[in-house]
Image 1 (cartoon, rainbow, N blue to C red):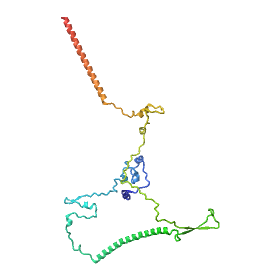
Image 2 (cartoon, one colour):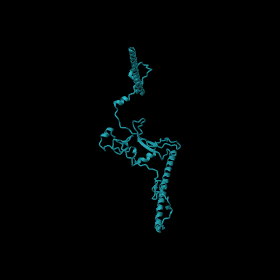
Image 3 (cartoon, rainbow, N blue to C red):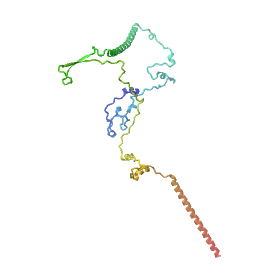
Image 4 (cartoon, rainbow, N blue to C red):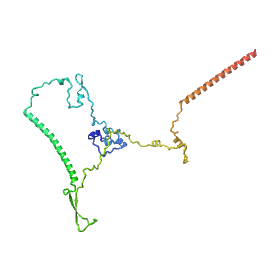
Length: 323
């Protein structure tokens, strides 16, 4: 068993066996304070209800009533600024008295009344109190030993008696009953019968008939709480998303089924693949367009220069003919 859970069990909040937890939609429509989860069974194996605006402690997590004890000693400082190590030696014990300073070594100023010897009445009262305390301790020890001795003696006597004197006349019991007329072997001359009941003989060396079984130990720590989200109604879109197409092979069709193309494409997984165009295609198209424009501009300029040269040649020939 878990010692931590066993130690914490008496301090847990009393739980009701019948806890009616409303649904998620009902909790939203309820008036404030109509449903307050106080017992641990109201949470089940889940966490707190966020729509209920009250302080909730599932599995008593964060509950101020269940504070864990700490073994960390707090070191304090005295009025002069020096560290006081009394708490380290006391280990958070308020009953321990520890002297760690030099002042504790100095003698105290006492009066005659403080160190005076007790009188006869005080001595007799202290002796009587001590005697009663010792008698109480000794009496409890003696009574326990007497009870244990009587139990052991009774057990041994019973075993010896059952093993040696089984069936003796002292332990026998006689039962008388009337004979049933409808019973098989009925004798009309015999109206009643007597049965002798004795104890069966028991072997003291017989091994025990029961088995000692080891119970598996519980977890060392409390299980982690599982926080469930509120129930959500299944929509048509979610149903379609969870539909998994059948496995269709592109190579085998032993039974000769006619498989539609859309089913083949769905099984192939082409519709699931995301189609994307590389950015280099746009860069290439833009580069080709710029190169074509520059080439056209160069061809146009070369044509203009060629026409100008031809025109100059025609004018020069006309002037030579005129001369």
